[in-house]
Length: 116
Image 1 (cartoon, rainbow, N blue to C red):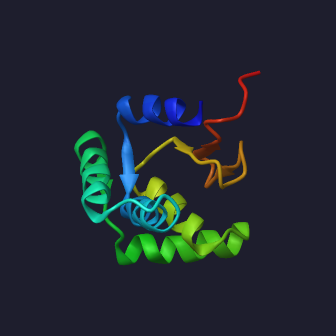
Image 2: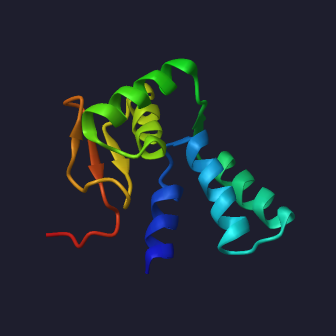
């Protein structure tokens, strides 16, 4: 069920951070034990479907500030910072608190929460 929901969100389009691509590559290799060819194919498909946001110094600095203010792990805060930089209104994440509003304009939504 999770895979179908994630696939549906990706096919709708949107923005993805290089940080997410890095984390996906790590999980694909370490946890899923995919070969490098499979990892490249997966990441390439995501890059084709979604606009990729670079990790810039400004995003890094915003990420540090978000981590400090919100007590988030730095890697999660970098994803939040990238979404803020991209002007996103919604960030889909099962790792960050569902419903959290950041900077008064970015709402974190867990895509796997039941709809109420």
